[in-house]
Amino acid sequence: ALVDEAPGVSAVVVGDAFEVAATSEMGLVRIIDRSRELAILDVSEGDAGLAADLSAIETDDSDWYGLILDAANKAAIETAAGWIETRRKMYVARTNDSDCTDPLSTTDTLASLQASGYARTVPCFHMEPGEFMDAGLLSGRLTAAPGSDTWVFKGIDTVRAYRLTTAEEKAILDKNGTTFTVIAGMPMPKGGKPSSGEWADTTRGIDWLIARIQESVIFLLRNNPKIAYTDAGVDVIRS
Image 1 (cartoon, rainbow, N blue to C red):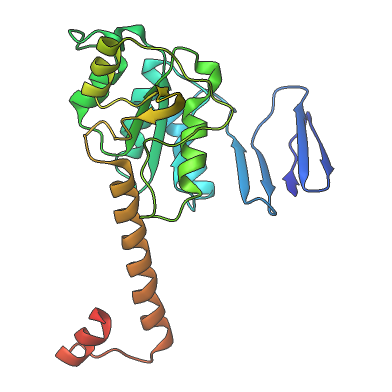
Image 2: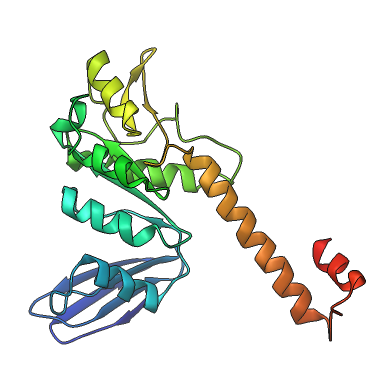
């Protein structure tokens, strides 16, 4: 692990693991666990706001795809959803906003995200935010090859299902939220959509395809002295 320390920060590295403790006000702390491809960036110096913090993380390292937050309040969720909407990344949010279960509510977290039409935020509803349903769902799905899975009817390790009435669950699903309840005796998510209503696996699959096409084109340009601006050259790119 590589640790760039700031004053007041101590770090202990044991094998592939790390432990960091901040003992006073700190500036920028960056921790990278190379073996697990895990990066943590603390941008707590000052209070520029969540969007600015996310931009600082992206500036330091933009080579990541999935986002989750420790926060589960509406303001933070909407800020992160707005930030990620302009990027080819995905944010899985979690909320315990009880108004989400009311089909008549138009101002709850899920309804607000749906009204904004966010295509890169997958909002999860669970009344126990400490279960971290968002982390469980995202980690489980990103380990599957793009195009090989869906984001529904799968287990989420360590997360307990939450009981909802039929009407409550329908209200959440109608607002493009994702639930985690017991179906046929087994806990599993239902929904699996960004707030826009598209399937999450479809969004991820398109992002994966775009990334691979871009890599292939760059590879051709890098490894050929010149690709002519002719029909033959276009055919090389197209192939």
